[in-house]
Length: 113
Length: 116
Image 1 (spheres, rainbow over the protein chains, first blue to last red):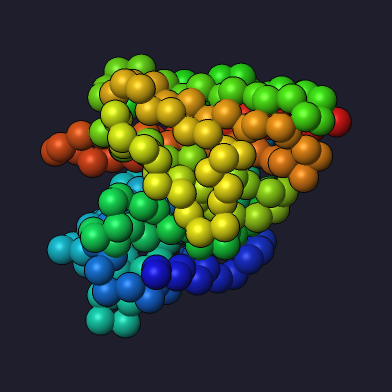
Image 2 (cartoon, one colour):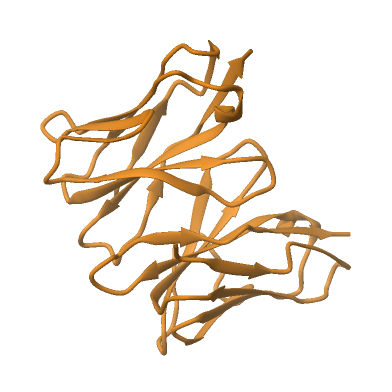
């Protein structure tokens, strides 16, 4: 089945710097790749997603890139702010597995003022 | 945007009792709902997938007799933890997937279950 690896597990940046989180997936049937932000004690919130027919997507300070050949996708956050501090999860969804989302291990991002 | 309401947000129960968690899609019809379990500082682990009107599909290693899932309508799914034990204490999160053409996933706010 699908396996998603996420790195790094923790990331500390200064306010205003950029943050990059990387994920790799194993199943070539995966065609949907969302990124979620989770704050303590809450459910995950979608921040951006990308489908396999697109290589890059941007929404203000957040961007996601996808390399299907290498089975890599990455989250880029520019001009980080303290409120960006949270745990971020990537996920992949194979088109032939009933809509399952398989999550990466998570990255705890800390933005220091 | 799409909203999923999950209740209760936290519950404490005694060992041996059962607990029911509800997940409702408030402004859309969810063809599929998913239940996850999350331990502290860990990722979300998929427990089961449920489609309205049919039996849930459980992931390997998840006891279907212990974690009963009912998806009676396109807006409601319930997870019942039966004969709960302290090791069932965890954060349970539901997710609802919209019907075509959106296919978006929306997560509930989670339920913190503590079994004493």
